[in-house]
Image 1: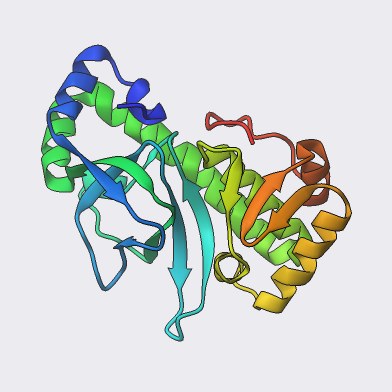
Image 2: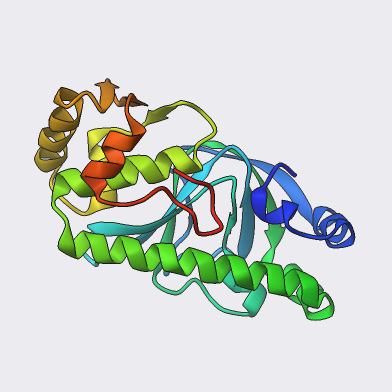
Length: 223
């Protein structure tokens, strides 16, 4: 399992986890779980990325997190919790390993070292969720777009990102026209090359300056 969270486990814990997982292929746009559509599965991501989105009743939403090969989604099931308010939206399709949440819950009840590793990851990830929620209230669209591109780069296994204006508007909870204007500004500044939904980062430091954030250094991969 080429997954950052699994790599933090002991050899014995990793072997026990692998025996309970199956490889799956995730498609861009898939919904892995939603408040009204719980799945009970945990996905350890390897070449895919999944956005954690809070949806309103009118269908609009706001992404509050993005998981990639460094971690997993659905870990709340390991703690015996339900889907909560989050919709798990596959941003980039790719490979993952899937396990039944109840099966892992019984496993971690016997493996305190595995539970501790999962708990630390959830705590670190919660700090990123808090940061994203904060910037959604305090930064303009251009800064938020730069921030999401940086985060997507950190969670991606490829140099180029496939991020359409429609998808970005959905993730940022803004109108598509606002994303288009912000993307043009970033391109004019020489920070990204953007063509037909494909984003190629030209200047990481410049993007960080626009996003007004340091490089990630919180236990998850650096942007």
